Image 1: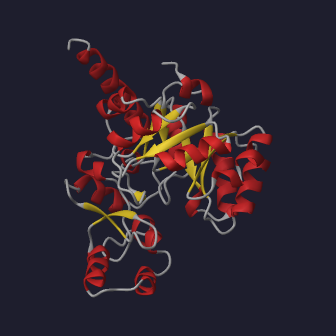
Image 2: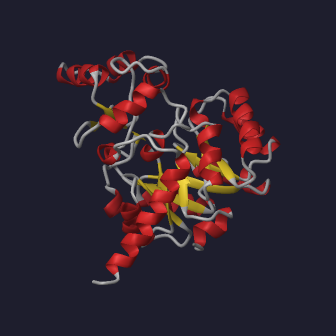
Length: 313
């Protein structure tokens, strides 16, 4: 399958594995790349030396393209970028910041740059900054999210209407049918997060993976918009946040409640009650832990089947 996204990245299928904190290490990224998609290392949960280790291991595990997702709020971002350049990574996805900050620097080093946005406004800013492609992520997505609560079904055609560069859809995509829907709406490819969390290769804790596959519709909710909007599975920590809101908690109160390393505690260390459990709404459609290569295969098989079916309408 050849289109703008497969050509841009040199991959077989227009499927990008999201660079998720505490889930997207070298095992997952290399497995997705080997299966024909684009694997991403999630640098947001890695110290610079850890990122370098994962890049080196990913290079050994695959000879296909892979990339790194870098949240620009990361405190040691200069060190991360130096490692990315030094290790000759060819693809970088940036998020959570101004795309103008690093796009030109990376492109001058021969790196393809993609920026993640949650609105038309930021999509236009990213295009103006000169990025090579955009990920438009809807409100359904797990982890940190847009404040406007625009759903993927509305966001993708809205962004497509305004930009000229390749567009990748994200948020609520865990099946081939959803992939086809996103591309009918104007996307050139899809970024899949939550589905790949429920894989043996994901570096997240087994207890977290089990909670993801056990999740039902309505088990996640966006919260902490005053700090950084984040979609979480409902657990004791989530309930504590809701109780804090009910008591009129200030931003400072919320910061104290959140504390440090709350996401690591939940998703990586396996504390299902006090940890922060970031996952998308689509977790309600994920029912098993499946190898990453099988996930890619299933996505493409269902995509092609759905595409054939709608030709009858």
